[in-house]
Length: 287
Image (cartoon, rainbow, N blue to C red; front, side, top):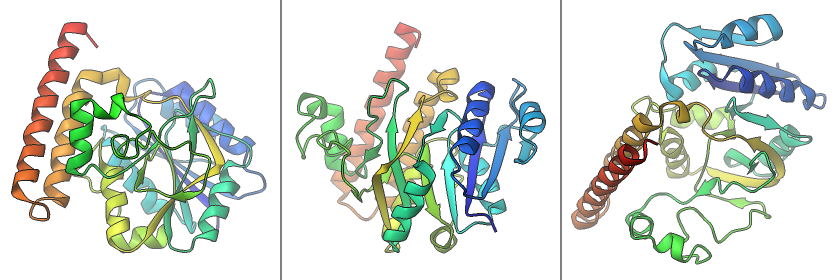
């Protein structure tokens, strides 16, 4: 059995995917890796590249773009190791990354997931861990208070901009761009909810982990370089609408009937107003 299953969902990021796979094998450090790539009908030759250059990789070549959530579920269904690393193709693992994640998971037996420190290609920190989007943090984000006082533990709560990422600690919901998950925890709460095809599927999964009594940890002992948004930037305008739709869907699933109706409906109205503003800005700027 492999020490670690690595699950990568790819869409038209051939060169990033190639570099990602190269980094995995270069920094395996004696671990037996089971690498599973799900290609969502890329038109850039990604699947052919994997077949030719990485014959050890288990390739699932979808005939249609099945989305991020379903693609990961396809990969996870094939994963045989105790732990699976969800990895975006626009990432590069570094020395000690894989063992650092596994060691953290073993130190915390109730950890359903472990997140590494994500950095941009120039080495700058990515604020990759967030609190759950409760009504108060939505208010701070939409009113701009989070940007006016990013070091505040209250106003900077959602994006955790008050934190320096130098300590190992529990976190609500890290980005799944690079996320180690414990298969037994996944088997208990279920895989990704495919009602969230692109966005908020990782937030939903993290919420289900915590609600089931599991924990999620961040460790600075593992570092992953993340180029950020290589796939979604190709269709940015459509992604703005999809991100807001998923945010509303998340609220309906996890907060309807669990918070006051005033807080619930005012948050949804605020999110809709934000969507209209972002869409108008994208049309004006062409971004």
